[in-house]
Length: 466
Image (cartoon, rainbow, N blue to C red; front, side, top):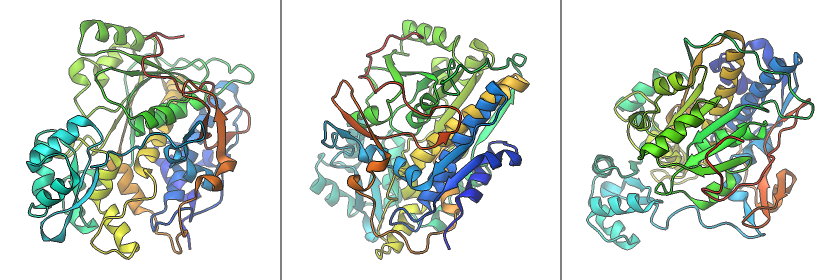
């Protein structure tokens, strides 16, 4: 028996604070398995993208007085969870996502540790901890005699990125796991703010978020997926980065649809003043810095809510805002490694004790769609109740939810190849050439779900609203 995506979507909708009766407007076609995994990746994809599409339908109801019908195809949603892997630029794959030294290494006692070295400063810190030159053979030799947990802690102490491979039982006993277990999947918190401001009538043929403004201060995957999702529903999304903050080109491309991309240096007075001006006219503020990091620049939730009463502020992080790891750096794959997901993947693949990650960056993608759903539910509440809102999501909370779904019996024999998913691909011209890409999952009966513009290079846009 395979998991029911309708039940999973109902659980997400409940976490969002949605009314159970609203679920009659969500229609999900298909079920797992889509991928060669015991984890219900397709179910999680259908549930998270379905909740986001239903939240968009809720906005449509606020603006028209009529409920659009929301529909999701489970296979399409699961393919969207690997959108960066299906992207083609001029018919060719984009540059490699992973640095050559990122990955799993055996540590002392036959245990495993993962190093995340996709950015130069993370690679340098890994080399410093291992006291080895940045070469795979040197890293392998250094790690053979080191304890996996010692490596994990030493990396964290100097701002590096890595994780020891744990079983689910080992993770459950960890203080960080216990802190996360006390949290819901996500939270949408209302605080005092302005009186209700009903959303204006929706122009014919417009996406349900037409006229709403989103600041996207995120990079890599989860946060950008959230902004990309809001753009698909018609929001004006301005991505704000900086020249000194590294990015990964394939992810800039894949998550840049529907957005403009500007640079502001928040280390300077000028950069902070410019962002404050943008905040004053924004509806949604998405940030994916580690807890406390952007607040140190003057843009924590309280500060942003004072600048823009009625703001919907979305916080994404790796390990949640609770527990001893709250401020620790982390990525999807590291959460899989630390929390037992990759270990169970190895057991299922007939490689007990070795890591086998999920066939998609499922925690990143699901968290992005959950963040977008939370933002839209907060916008709908703002229209009726007033107030400002803080939406909180994390990769670790999403991972706990995914790991709690029923397991797949009879996984698919392999991940779909690009030629197998052409029904879900579109082609869009861009500054890089023709882009073949996964189109947005989900549809609304009365409004388009599509990106109006292709991705643009970093700093190509001015830091101002249209």
